[in-house]
Length: 173
Image (cartoon, rainbow, N blue to C red; front, top):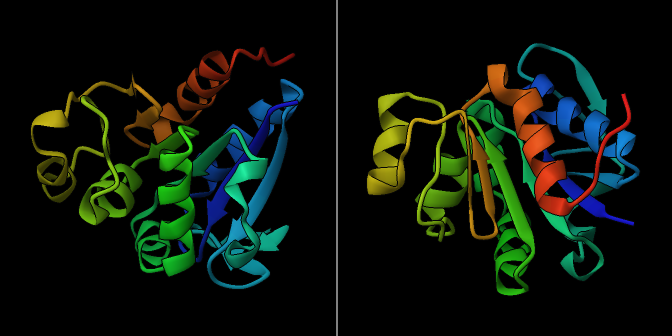
């Protein structure tokens, strides 16, 4: 069974958090939400999401992928978390998949030196695009090695389906 670790924080974009979890569960995957804030996080549109565990309990050896939703505040909170950055770095070193959407490819990955993909995408704001430098494609989703990136809320479903395709699982709708 595929296991996904999903990072969440106050300010995480709800559709970018819940859509991958929903689609992955429909494909038979187990998803565990790890918070960098508290047991309950308030998303960017005020929706409260309950975490399963705190990020300091995340052991990437138990997971196939780590998923990082966007939302500028959420991405910033995740990027500031030592435990989250350590989990992402461990996933990369263990050749696990790393999926990030919206602001997260830039704020969490690129700005922390963790985006080792040849190509990537993100929300098309100047700050984020410049963080990706020549890696930026402008596409809705990009798969490059172990990295899966997407450009924002309107691509949440495509992002989730790309994760499933990359993991070799098929959701049942």
